[in-house]
Length: 417
Image (cartoon, rainbow, N blue to C red; front, side, top):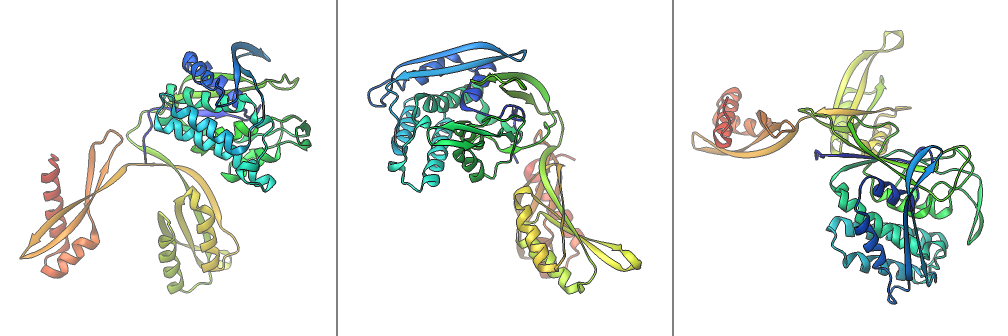
């Protein structure tokens, strides 16, 4: 688990997300506008097919909210095929003074965008004819966002997003009339299992470029803001004006709350079992551990008619929820599994190995080292199985060997009592 110095929340709950809105919000947060402008202007070459690029960055008002709006236009607006557009973005960022994370981000975004179009139409990249996506603003928004994110240091931050509002109703584009979200947009969200929601108005609120930026940037989606101290907010404005809502994207930057503990998100899975033999339950526990569970416990209970039963409770990474639920159902025959998503406060744990030689018997003993978020060691614990092997070889009490291993580890790590 990594402790980040800053937290970033991209709030897409009201007006969805678009590439120009992301870039506008990043500039509103203080990203270097000159760096961003120069990076976008680097697209102005015969090699890329764009000329006379104009970049307009201005402050606007949307339903009483001040926001930054970015517009990029160019001559030579010939749609590119998919392979050409990927080459344009990747060549352009390679020529810029960017971190490797920023360059990889830009590459990932354009690949997500083009691959979604190719998969939808069953074409190879060479055969993907891009219409709206082939205009200069697509490449400009991706490259500009990569530069702005790098300038703000956000590739080293913990980035959250809210579920994305995708609007609704029908709209017209190059392929005709379609419903919102567009096929490409929903394909991009589907590719990363990214949560979306309809509304709150009938309009296209999430664009393919905005979706591709979001799914390649965000590490966690949350309905509610995480614990933090807000530091700054940036607002990016979209092209349209709506009667019902401000057409803005808000990005909030904050600092984690000071704590000696580190936080992570877990899933708790549990089910009641009243008809399984003890050996079966023991097997299920072993199977759950082998399939990736962090911890498994058995809680004795009484159910209806005072029937004795057990709760199998599993702690797991959220990404493993569906798989471990399937294992529980397969192995126990239960009709349902309860799932709770929650935050866990933990201390970091490292493993350190030492060699103990007792009565001519040498054994490597692993020491579990627990640290707080400042890196201070607060506990040492020798691995039980290693001590057990040494106890069986030497005949010495396990307690005594544990004390010897802990003392040696403290001396080697120079830890005072």
